[in-house]
Length: 242
Image (cartoon, rainbow, N blue to C red; front, side, top):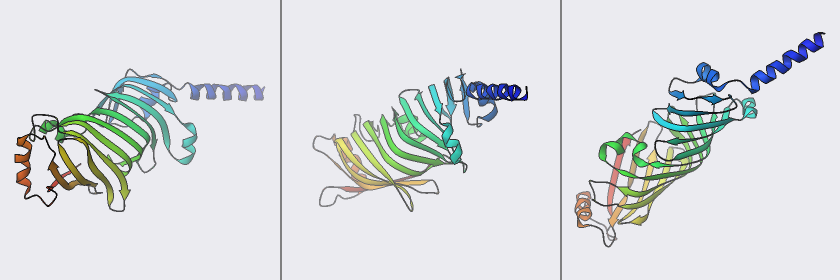
């Protein structure tokens, strides 16, 4: 009789774990900066109609938990979601140190949804991201291997029209994260390096010149950067904090 009771209890626990409601898990375990609504499914495989994560609005949220990763001390799952415009897909792992690691991360969304600075200055573009690995700690990137492309980049202070397409390839160094920035197409010839340090400061340092056919207004703006070198390139520098 005891064996039957034990077997029945074991089956009950297994069924409970497998079908543990996602909405209950959310109420118990969700961090304060994650807010979801329209939750359905189980803790292992579920979805939410919409939500906020770190202040960013997302919809059509889906996840699939990887139980084996719990043995390594990480909560890992595959997730996909759509921001106000665009899509995101990645494998996620939460470390015991509070780090968040995104693997095989891909996404596309409007540039003005990424950082408040772009919203304030009216800068716009189509942002696409492809990272083999991206690790964040306290919302700061600490490891990055991948690329970011901005297409149809528009900056009203420089030109009334689109400036072009640009790409940054990122890698991790001892001093932080660095990325080489180059133009793919457009009216500006750009070569620079963007650096993100552990103290949240970032800088973009490089050289820029206009290409044939660029509006005269851009050339007038670039004159404020100083005299061009022998290649017609002028140095520029942008700095800020994340």
